[in-house]
Each structure stands twice: as structure tokens, then as C-alpha cells.
Length: 148
Image 1 (cartoon, helix red, strand yellow):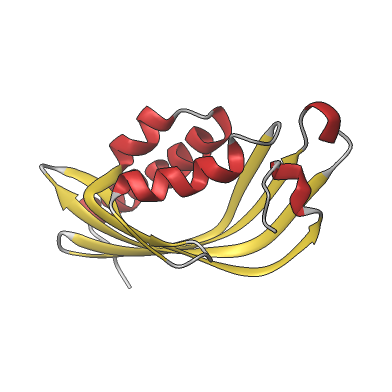
Image 2 (tube, rainbow, N blue to C red; image 1 turned 180 degrees about the vertical axis):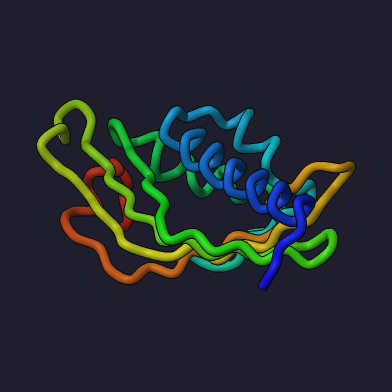
């Protein structure tokens, strides 16, 4: 299979956007995360359907704002571009450390991001994020949530 230069550049831009979104979560840089999401972005992150970029970011913040440092590592990234749409799949391994009195706690997940992308005004925007969790280890208390 031969790829043309435009497709390779599209794949690179999408790959960079994947990385920027992961770093934005870890940096708690919600403004950057918002610029990557399409205006009509949707998501399914394991708690039910989310409609709109604000809902996607709000759910992520619900967990990350209550814990300490995090690191979302991506690997085995596959990107398929078809015109002005694309799909990507990436393994994600995310580590969450506790904050304050929960600093001795940690939470780790292994999963997959299955994403759909759309070119909007010449930029690739994340239109749909689905996270499939393969497993987790440790304690939800790291997030400081009352999941009662």
C-alpha cells in the first residue's frame, strides 16, 4: 500500500492532536483540549453517552481535578484517513496519583481510544472519543469522588 504525502501529513497531524489531548489532560489545560474537540464532539468514556465538547471535558475534569499528577501514555496508534474524515485507534495506559491525604493511592487503567476525526476549516478535530477499558488496578478513592 502506497500513501501519498497529503495522507501522511494528515496522519501526522491527527497523531499530534492525540498526543496534545493526552498532554492537555495531564496538564489540566482544558482550553487546549477544547481546541482539539469538534464543536459537536461526542464521547463514551465508560459512564454513558456524552454530547458536546463541554460534556466530554466536564466528565474528564470530574475525575482529574480531584487527583494528583496523571500520565496518559499512548501506543500502537493506527490512523486511517478517508478524505476529510479519519479513524484512529490507540492503546492508552493512564496512571493517576493521589493528592493530599490520598497521596499514597494510585489508579491505573489499560484501554483503547477509538476516535473519529473530521477536518474542519483545514484542521483535524476530534468528533467522537470512545474509551474501551480493558482493566484497572487500585482504588477509585484516588479521585476524591463520592461514588456511593
